[in-house]
Image 1 (cartoon, rainbow, N blue to C red):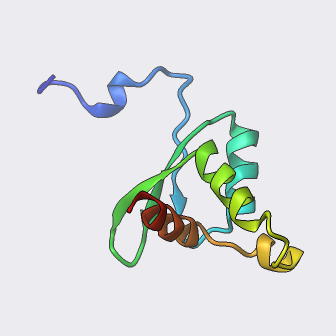
Image 2 (cartoon, helix red, strand yellow):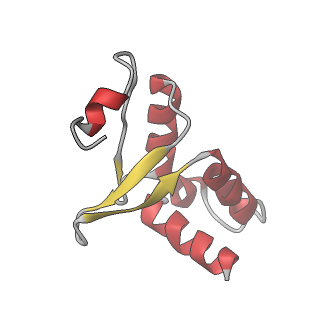
Length: 93
């Protein structure tokens, strides 16, 4: 393993998609669907590191959070990935 690069382990047809945590969730899920990717690592530019992974479970958590109907469509459309990470941390505790 020490003589190979990480990209050599991926199939030639493999896709890698990474999202900035400031990206709107709605846009991120559209990109996941369009690219045929089920999960994507999350990059936090301010911390200069990967902070998590966005998956279908996150979408379910968002839908559950907004199911109460207290939010406008505009508010839902503007939700950032960073907010999802915050909600997931609260749920895990």
